[in-house]
Length: 152
Length: 267
Image 1 (cartoon, rainbow over the protein chains, first blue to last red):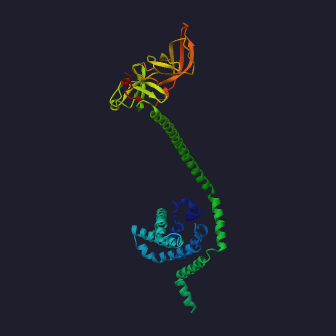
Image 2 (tube, each protein chain N blue to C red; image 1 turned 120 degrees about the horizontal axis):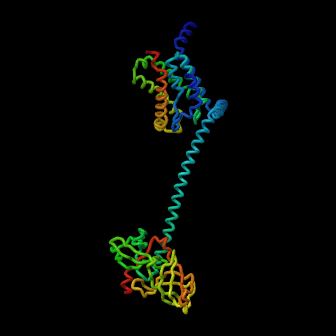
Image 3 (tube, each protein chain N blue to C red; image 1 turned 120 degrees about the vertical axis):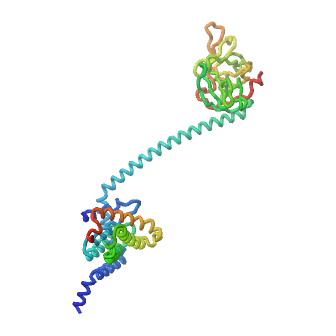
């Protein structure tokens, strides 16, 4: 089911955009993979998904390698912090996941729009809405595949 | 040594993988403009466009329909605006003509708006927006730039009721020009009048004009009334039956002038 959703997300990414804001579905999948699969698999997937993103969902400005770089780093950091994050419960746990998405989007948009849009503008115009949108999708999927069920 | 290296790789495999992937990513970043990459991206764009085509078509159709609906509404709104502006243009032209008439008239004219057209005691009356506050009194004469309209029947503080000369019971003392023959004019039908009892010994021609005679206690002299269209002989053979058209288009009247205290002057 996750694979089917993944393919749909890649193909119909443009149709789920709201006012030019697209959720980072691949990052959502990577977070789930980090929680459900082995760390090595998650790191490989992070690089792979990032690569796919740059090839198939390049956006308007094409940076070849930016997505695999940031996704690999963020998932590595997430895996390292996972034991600490998993000790959190309820809203704090969800906030920590939100933080992961936010940090990824801050760095991604900062580099992606560097030279085109001012950092502050990029933050409130793209980073914050994208983070909220991505997090909402993550929460929706959380209802079907609970994020911390494996560690309960 | 090798076993130590193997242990290190096993222990730090995640970090090693991360470093390798970061290295590859950085290498890729330096190849952003690579033509192979761009070709792959272009190829994918073609495939994804083909896959998205039905949905995009549907979206486009929906958008076109919405746009069409909005444009229809705008066209309707603009048509209404054009009609309003045309109406204003006509009104403006009419008012300009009236101003011109007032400036050239030898009488003191008070412009007034017809606020109501209706019936009172079986005869058609009009209500004007000027009353005693503008010194409008009974028997004041009403004219239009084309000619005589009627007289004030009664005046209130702010409005007045007047009747027009197109009434079966109304008679006006007139003079036919250029022969200067006097007669009594009465309404015939529609926008036509009739003048009877003019002897056939007097020559009358169609096209001659009819004005007020000045013999009346109400109407001052030389106010245009209409033009003669037909001259017949009555059944007795001694008098003319003169028919003509009023100058004023009574049906389209919107504004009129009240001649200030003409009755007093003529009296």
